Image (cartoon, rainbow, N blue to C red; front, side, top):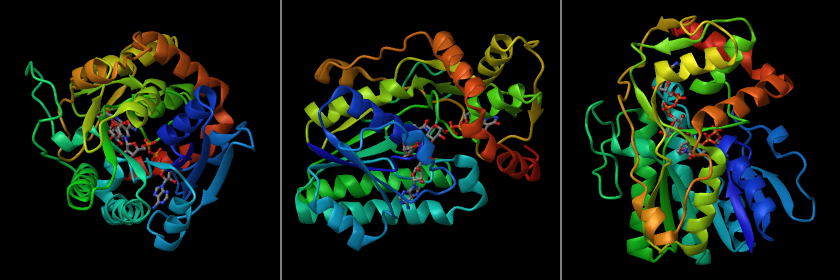
Length: 331
Ligand code: NAD
Ligand code: DAU
């Protein structure tokens, strides 16, 4: 199979590309605009006879049409992905996440192409800290931020193109990913690289907010499972029962790096900051037989810390710019 992966130079997309090359005989083409978040260094070492990179925008209908005509399936990761950026300047989120997805769906319709849409648990809004409930495939959409509302919009477009035009699409909504190659703007890499540079971690607000962490490799194995066995038109939630509050994660990072566990600062809270995400992935596990392999978050975090320690050349070019943007917002 020839798979087109949009956003394959980003954190999760590049993980999926490596995962597919390592675990299947498929060929992969990446379509990526190389925004500030895309990094070709994340795609090094792939075999030239099974991998190709195309620089381009998913809103470029002519380019998308040409690429869809030459592939068997598309897996759509490309997005503006960072909540804080969406609060500062929402427009690129509307362009890429909504118009970009629309552009791909029109090509999928024309070429009758298998299409898998990567989305987020944030489309469901948030849960109370003491709520025993978790998100399921039938939870009502209730996004909070410009980012999550554009992802919700893109999900609804996919559903409409399935129902109205018979596009052969599936959707997955995953919780927070961690692992190597994540941009230093995101929570875990920001705190790890702060400590490695002798800076204190920065916790938004009280730090009681809960995220449901999953290793990026487990996200990739789930997406491949859905591409292979998922029922057309259906949605699958991806999660690995990894709920932790942000304060605990920061304390764990500090401890693993040999620092006092209270050596962090509280900074200005995120506007509209979602309190808690939690995924019930029963459907994916029971209907498609998927299960995560990274069940030990502390071990996965230790591996991730070791990767950032050993790969400063990958993240250092982005670090100063990212911190300058945060400093301007008091974060
Ligand atoms: P990322 O920001 O690391 O990477 C996004 C990639 O998309 C970059 O390589 C960028 O260059 C590319 N891109 C952006 N705009 C583009 C455009 N117009 N045309 C072509 N390429 C473009 O993001 P990520 O964290 O890897 O997230 C990937 C996808 O997974 C997103 O759709 C996101 O909503 C979803 N997701 C992320 C998480 C998470 O924890 N990071 C969890 C669930 C779902
Ligand atoms: O839930 C899935 C989503 O997870 C994805 O859809 C998004 O693309 C991805 O960015 C992520 O969104 P979050 O907003 O949850 O991730 P972020 O890494 O930005 O923040 C995680 C938590 O940490 C959140 O509660 C905010 C907090 N935070 C973040 C930063 C950058 C801090 O306390 N300090 C920080 O410096």
